[in-house]
Amino acid sequence: MATDDPFSEKLRVPEALTFDDVLLRPKQSRVEPDEADMRTRVSRNVTLTIPVVSAAMDTVTEADLAIEMARQGGLGVLHRNMGVEAMTDQIEAVKRADELIIRDVVTAAPDQTVRDVDAMMDRAGVSGAPVVADDDTVLGIISGTDIRPYLQVGEHDEVREAMTDEVITAAEDVTAREALELMYEHKIERVPVVDADDRLTGLVTMAGVLARREYDAAARDDDGALIAAAAVGPFETERARAADAAGADVLFIDCAHAHNLDVIDAARDIRTEVDADVVVGNVGTREAAEAIVEFADGIKVGIGPGSICTTRVVSGSGMPQITAVAEVADVARRHDVPVIADGGIRYSGDAIKAIAAGADAVMLGSYFAGTDEAPGRVITMNGKRYKQYRGMGSVGAMNDGGGDRYLKDDEDGEEFVPEGVEAAKPYTGSLASELHQLVGGMQSGMGYVGAETVPEFQEISEFVRVSAAGQTESHAHDVVITDEAPNYSPEN
Ligand code: XMP
Image (cartoon, rainbow, N blue to C red; front, top):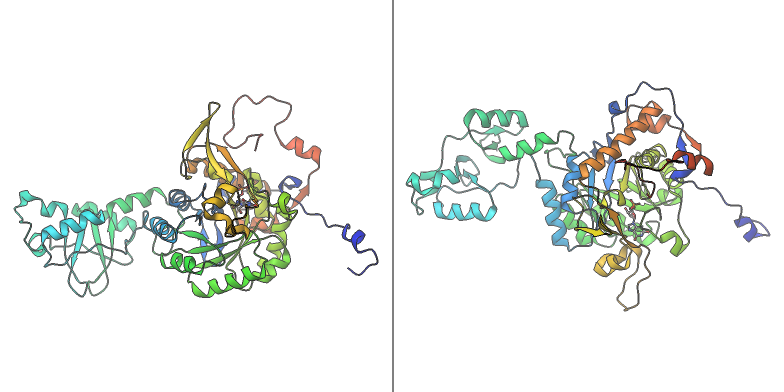
């Protein structure tokens, strides 16, 4: 910017837009909203059924919410305000929830005593176990009913005496339906899965099949387990390795400003250490996207749009979200890297605008913080029910260990400079019903534009600019609302 008046020149500022500044231009359409296919990629190798991700915040995503998100077709990103072991336990809980073929099978040996096996099954919380030889060949199956005293099996007898040795097994490619048919036909509750040499490779249980049937649009990996994701700090290599080993499909490098060069170096190193996809963020500009796009499997966008964020007012820095997403998506698209729009989404309309601006998926915190599955209990204030919701850069979250996202530490005993607030969200009930409203609204947006798939929608959607008067007109106006709608609140 060569000029004799550099500061005045600086005031010739480009415009940056956010959700309320734009609307989707309605277009000719034959697409009914419920026909709109919401499938998308959240990272290079991970596909979701709906383009929705829950925020890695300690008042939003722990295992319960992550499991339900994946069951509904989205993704929950476990927060990192917990120890590494707690995080790996939670990742494993997500991966194990309603998997079809259990890989980590509790097995018994034929020469173990009945008492031993009974105690072992008790400890593992299972009610039956395949009996396998040293080379994993399946010899039988033993269950609680085989070892009940009335069957006159002594507790010191060997398992081979008590087990059922006519075992019904299935091959690796068994489907849920086939497994269920086998179980009904033979009146059994578990079917060992074996390879061509009859060696045990997994187990299908009745409980697992039934849980899966309920969630036919769930986001699953190739083995049928739910997709799991966890946040890791850019300098937390150990946490990243542990999350990867525990089976996380995606790691989210969790940083408020990923255009920091030390962060980029560290994130690149993590990328080389793990098998999981690595999403890097947050960024908000074209230049930042260019700096990470070569190695990132996904790019997360959002510098200060979040409902509990005060980054923009505290630091004076940030990018209105629609422009931020569009700048990053221009770069990411050329490298076929998915983009996630993180923060600031209050309504389903905001979410679909973010997709139109180039995001492949959206990440939300406040929208889910009031649900049953979010951590924490319901509190009552003035007769209304709420759940706690706080920024990860708030004093409370930083005191609990979450401050380094904001590149500060308290080792020198100095006070934190927070970039977030502690708040509450109205209690909203089940995550499934919140997601139903969110995704239903997004599908409606695709219907107005006439797009059947997310990529088509990104391609053909157009924005119009909205004036302040247009914005007022968009909301309910000139009326007194008498009944709350499930997807709209003027206070949002
Ligand atoms: P929403 O609007 O969905 O935003 O509640 C969630 C996103 O906000 C970010 N986040 C923060 N940003 N200070 C910030 O500047 C904070 O304390 C803070 N905590 C969370 C984060 O990207 C999250 O996904």
